[in-house]
Image 1 (cartoon, helix red, strand yellow):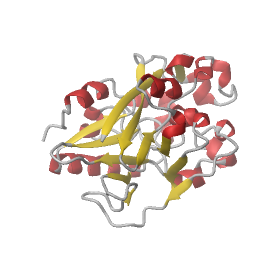
Image 2 (cartoon, rainbow, N blue to C red):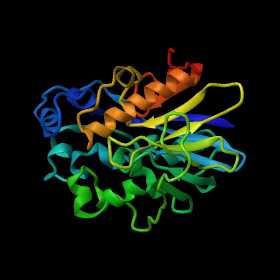
Image 3 (tube, one colour):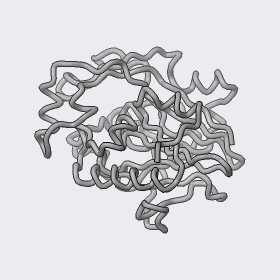
Length: 277
């Protein structure tokens, strides 16, 4: 396998989103009334050149999102707490081209979750099989999805994903898992909390640490190790349980932990730097 790391532009959010403060509705309230901004954070996506087909994990955002008017003005989070910096050349289709790959060559697109900075680039992948957690698909659509922080009106109308219910065997510290590849070396695991149906992707290769493509299970490796739930997690209890599972997993199995917005993810990936045991 050959794996590529991309950053589809940058995003700034409120510091209270990265490191949540309070519990329940208070966590989100603290995000919305925070007046500071984080430094620009990456929006990572990953391409896995696998013998069974090209796999893309998340699709990043699209360049229109750099204009605040792209997001609904009536939504308090998108109006107050998110700023995107993204050029058309940063979009995932252009990034794939620069490493000799193409959107038409992608067999699977795996979405860790449906937030727009992870699913915005779906429009480039009409011919791929889109794979997503069943709970994520059921909670991310319609008025209910809107209330939970999704923007379902921005999803492609043609989107009809293959949903994963996670009823299969557990994997190490995860209660269930779903092998994406027949070889069993790319495996989806449930990591709920940030969203109800959030998932992560474990990539295994002989003689190398696992790669754990963690989406927004945490915003940084250090916050995962500290067990800090983010400020917009839809289910704080589930998010905390996920962080404990990630801690146990990365202690027991050499693992390079790669959240989507961690400024250090690309460096750890390049060095194959596992989480300290």
